[in-house]
Image (cartoon, rainbow, N blue to C red; front, side, top):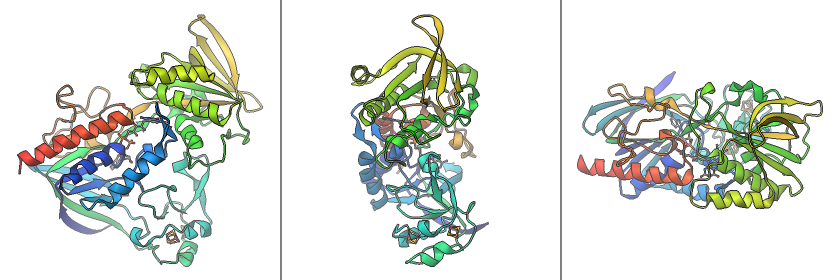
Length: 433
Ligand SMILES: Cc1cc2nc3c(=O)[nH]c(=O)nc-3n(C[C@H](O)[C@H](O)[C@H](O)COP(=O)(O)OP(=O)(O)OC[C@H]3O[C@@H](n4cnc5c(N)ncnc54)[C@H](O)[C@@H]3O)c2cc1C
Ligand code: SF4
Ligand code: SF4
């Protein structure tokens, strides 16, 4: 049930609080305009805040992201709504949009929560932790992750048994089960879409055994195992908690494959796998790491050197397409593959396999616009109507796109695109004053 309708206005609406949306929000807010930043998750930071380190510099992702997210949360010109979604946007006239925003209840008053975690300790319900990509559990009363912003608890009402244990221990009485969904009507003059990307779901490729064989994990799960805020104190394989010593990467899982509906290159998987292989060589010096690839696409500045560095550290690169993965009784995995250089089918045994999952479009934004059509490109990313001269322009005048909402890209490119979208939005605001 929706409890209230509130009417308010801002200069710019930004949808998506990942690195692209956050950067665009800061750029616009720093020029004096009022920004409403809408994030559907419990924390801003997108995928980047959950990464280990970044290629090719190996800077710590959390160390770069946390100052940004804290600047976004505290900026006087940015109003941040988490656990929120835009349900519709109508273009009234030239630079006049009206958006309806639905704010889901968190059941915790963010401003009063001190993140003391007493509710977490008291809660008797455990469920898989989506922020650790289900490698460990969390409670139904939980703080999403240690560097979340806002850093406040939330109640997972789907799994809550309403026992009241969290309410009893909360020292600030900020748990409020009476919270309801709220609706806001917002007037804005420009919109930036920064809804990011979706990860390919490897369950769609049953021949790789994800979901069936515990020691087949995704690259995002390996990011968590390598991150400073990691679930375990070292790298462990899920089936028996053993430290792996023969790890394989399967590149292009869900990318460059028309048979699963995604013919394009995801642009980031080669490089993030090479990054992870270097971090693994550091964390587990005795381990063998093998990367199975179709082509290594190390096209950016410093990328080829980063690739050569991994080879120099002893990472094995095998040009081969993986046909099938099967499991042995001890949890080890047999990879059947075509060795492209030797032109023959081979098998290799590994004790852990990482699927380097690709980038898919998030089509959330398409259904928002009721009065105008937001066009998509042939791959279902947001169409850039003038990709050479004004890459942030969409098919709707006054609506711009930032980051991976328009296609696969890495963090520096997402930030560049956010710069483009925010400067286009600022010029639009100035022109239509
Ligand atoms: C395993 C892995 C490792 C990587 N390693 C690196 C690396 O080392 N270096 C590098 O440069 N890049 C790396 N990347 C790529 C990097 O994650 C992306 O370039 C970056 O996250 C893109 O940022 P974004 O803001 O465009 O999208 P996202 O990070 O996807 O953020 C989008 C945000 O929008 C929110 N959102 C989505 N839909 C809605 C909606 N309808 N309403 C409101 N909010 C919404 C999401 O919740 C999210 O917070 C890696 C990616 C993966 C998968
Ligand atoms: S009321 Fe719900 S969230 Fe609170 S302790 Fe009980 S099960 Fe956990
Ligand atoms: S909701 Fe209460 S008990 Fe839970 S972290 Fe916040 S202040 Fe602590």
